[in-house]
Structures are given as C-alpha cells and as structure tokens.
Length: 416
Image (cartoon, rainbow, N blue to C red; front, side, top):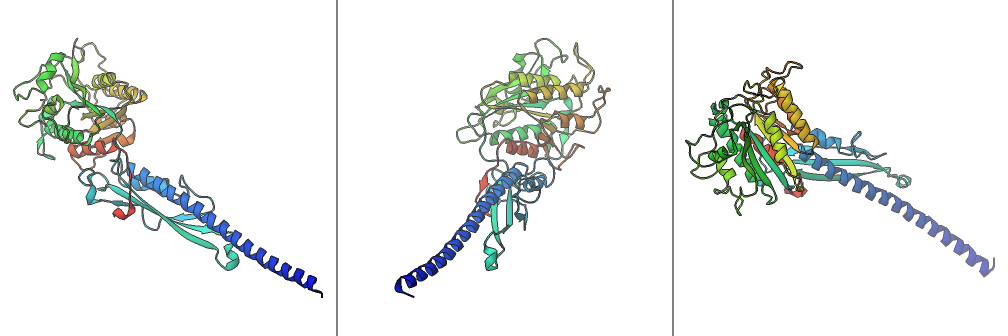
C-alpha cells in the first residue's frame, strides 16, 4: 500500500471516530435539551398549582386548596399534565402556617394556614442515553405561594349590614352584641383594604326614613337613634349611611378617627357606633339593589358584602311584593353579579329555616344566603349559623373576605 492510500485509510478511521463522537454529543444534547424543556414545564406547573391553591386557602371547604393545587399540577389528569412524563407529588401539597406572615395573613378558616407548598417529581424517559444504560432521569420542581393577600386590585366596596332588632342580642362568640361583633369585623376589613385607590361605603337595612337621618349613625352619640322608614316602600327612604370614600385610613394605615365610616362602625376612639333600631322586619333585596345602583364605573372592581341572618319575611312592605322575599334578594344579587360585581354573602346566625314568604318554590335562610354569593368561594358562614359553619365568629369571616379580595403571591421556597 502506497503512502497516499495509507493516508486515506487513516482519514477514514479518524472521520468514523469523529462521526461517532459527534453523534454521541448530539444525542446527549437532545436528551439534555428535552430535560430542560420538561424542567421548565414542571416548574411552571408547580408555580401555577401553588398560586391556584393559594387562592383557595380557607375559602370554601376543608382542604379545597390542596385539591385545587393538584388539579393544576402536572400529575395524571392535571390541567398541566406533560405527555409521556410520569409526575408525582412525593409530599404534598402541604398547607403551612408561616408565623412571619401572620400579622397580615392570619391562619384562620377551614385550613388554619396562610401558605401552600407544591413539590413535584418527574420521571423523564430519555431518547439516546439508554444505549449507555440510562433510560430515565428524575427532576424536581418546588413552589410556595401565600394565601390570597398579595397585590390588592383597586376596589369599590359597599358593606350592606343587617341592623334589624335581633342584632342587639348578645353574641358570646366575640363577647359583644351581634351588631358589635359585626362592626368589629368591618373594622378589621378596613385595615386590610390599604390600596389608596380603594373606596368603601356602608349601607344598612331596614332603611332610614330619609337621607338626613344617616348622619345620626356616625355622630358619636350613644343616644342618637335615627328614624327608620315605616315600610320598605316609603317615599324618600335611604339605605346609605356613608357613601363611597377613601378616608378611612390614616397615612400610617390605622383607622382614621375623623372618617364618618370609621365612626359609624365604632372604630373612632371615644365614639359610639351606629345602632340597630329595627322595627319593620327583615327584607334585604332593596338594599342589594341600592348598593348596586351606588357602585360607579370608575375602573375599580365593584364589590357588595351582605351581612345578614338571611330570614327575609317583613310584614312592612307597603306597595312592594310581599311574596318570595328571599328569592327577590337572590334575583337582585344575580343582577349585580351579571353586571360584574362580586357579591359576598356572610351568613350571620342563619338557619335552615325561615323565608316564610317563599312558597313557590320554598327556600330557607341558609340556602338564600348561599345563592346570593356570586360564586361558592364568596359565601361565608359563622359559628352561630347552621349552614356550612366553620366554627369561627363573624370577625374572622371579615378577615377571610379581606384575604379573598387580594391575590396570592409566590414566596421563596427557602422561606419555610
């Protein structure tokens, strides 16, 4: 063999070896690229699962946050399932009570938690590594999110409060009258609504005889009882105590003593709160409609928070329809929801009875209050109610409403 042929033979050998090496590197690059792709999808689904679960912490049923997180994971059947990849959750999702966050996000409600941790593990099949005896690779992705309580969207909030005579009864759950407990809950809600673009107002039912009576509900005199309308159809009546405003907090995010809203709900130092005069029974459909009519279109999210025992059965209706009084309220709330308003319903001492004017079809106070909420996560029930009670007092319910008006946020996993 001459020298030229020898050189060609060596070149072929070198080329073959180089081709094998290059093929190996290309195969390795394909497997590494696929692993990176799956890792990104797994992390994204872990983040999505944690945020979705965070939204449902303490919201509507025990461990609802866990089932929601699983539904948004990459496990089999999840919204973010990865084809061909087996994903498990070795531990969790786990609900956590982070003490560092308890000043703003209390561990109350169904779950007694304020954060959720999602850990996912994926077994990824490889394409070319099996020739080297490696058939799969295992990767992990972890994420943690708070309960709803992060960035707060601008809101217009009208609290519609039951001030019928039964609200003067004592409530051992918080050591005050039923009205006093509810007003303390409103105060806690105001402290959570810190966005300066928020606007909050207050309405009560039964309605007042006329607008001039509203000032008596925040003039700080314990003896100043306003005149209630003689019927729910009296001309000139008003449900509004304080219109929408943003003066309820000081620059230091404390309750502002000079705010009429703070005075009305008993948050001003040395100032008596509004009173529950009652006298014309319970009918709240008109209050819901009045609240919706008072909500503006200014770019903020509109919100109605109704607090009542839900037993609408007034015999002081005047010219209004006396029948289906609870269903009238459900219809009014549905109209508000259709208009884009978030309607929250707080069943306060509600029973699985009542609504005696609703005969075709029949209903009860609990069912009516549940139907009023725009969606199930916007319905809350206190320990004195017989419908889905969480064992908490009404003050805790307001805290949970405040949390739900915010959004969950991701937390560094090393914050555990």
